[in-house]
Length: 595
Image (tube, rainbow, N blue to C red):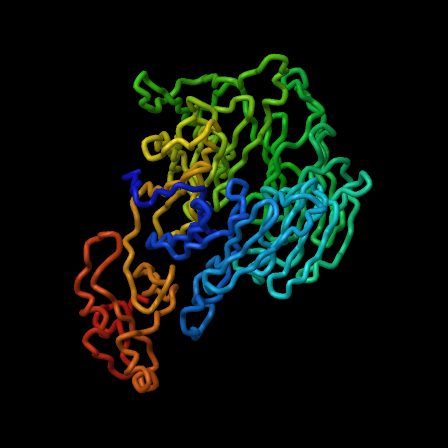
């Protein structure tokens, strides 16, 4: 990690919600909804909320990304050239949901709970696209699907869960139908007359395609596979090890149960079942974390276990590097290479607690390539196991000073892991795997070094009141050619952090909002459409017909005090007015040969 860039002007005194494509960030500041561009940090929208809106019990959500152009721009020649963006954001309290559009300041939608006969709104999410909103009522009595185009509503009774963290519902993945991968069919887990029911609902109309009575007794969740072919449903752990695999049309394909353990005395938890379920990136594996401190990776061809990842109370793995964190009297953190066998600290057992509930695989995180897996066993909550799925062995094991609560791989960089601890102060750890370690083409024995600790206690003010700070940290979904960034905050403030420094951004004329700042690389490679002209608008009527090309006009100034980049007149000929018939705008730069 080279530098940590935390500028005071990028702090905010309110909770935040970054957009899925990391183009904007929304926050509540008092009774106002503020939306900033993450490219320029300029305030794009500053919306005043009614006095009746309960800011303290509000939630924010962004719409799924789409390729529809910004309304301020002229219609492009090819809509597919526009990068995906989330254009709508909603803010909801217990009674009302308000939706705003970044492309049209005059457009907004208000969804009212009416008399509230079915209870308050406990969770609000966008549906399969930006024109649908899903509202869960209190006591999990119903789900209301609202169409923002027609005002039509569809009521679905008796959902089993409140919908938070996508528990109990999900859209079938269908890449060709949506930029974000959301597809056509909604799977919803319901509970009717004491029976678990799987509802498969059609797109748009949400008519019932199929109603399936599940083979489970107390289903805990559903997960679509990444290719949309399979649907995994697992039973409560108290009922044993039960996992059901259904096809996309609702037919039961296989039921998986726990094999009798020969090590009952050692584990002491025979009878408890599944704790977490995740589909591994790709379409070949399903990972199941159990209360027996074992991760089973199943093949999607037979759904039989092919790999076991066991977590032991004593670490003795010659192929893995074990790093232990040390904290001195001044609070300085460092990592040392621990000798094996190493015994990490166990979870604290409270009075009248058997300790049985504090074990099992509660966190599994896979990188984007599916080559690395990071896990946590609740019996040793300070230990991070990082597995090499090429060699099927632990590669690095981290023993932290305090327990941690989140593991997040970067969505674009397969070798960067963010670890969030449970410290009272915001303390994060950045682990970078060896580049060859995270590559499918080669698996080597080289191991990465210890993680880098990042303390941001000086960058935050403790939240007002007696409530403790609820720290959250997440990666921004930046593209692979952009530098990584993260947002860290609590219930009353947030800050943006660039571990490797910020990208240099150039400003272009003729665009508004987030489209006004794009990297030069995106423009040259065609990933971002060429913006319309201002200075040459008068010549467009006859030059554009003859030449058939767009020419961009670049300002000499740059954003956020970066050094100016000269020689633009030598590269972009529009400043000199030299545009010849059939000649590329990159004629003398050599870029026409590169791209």
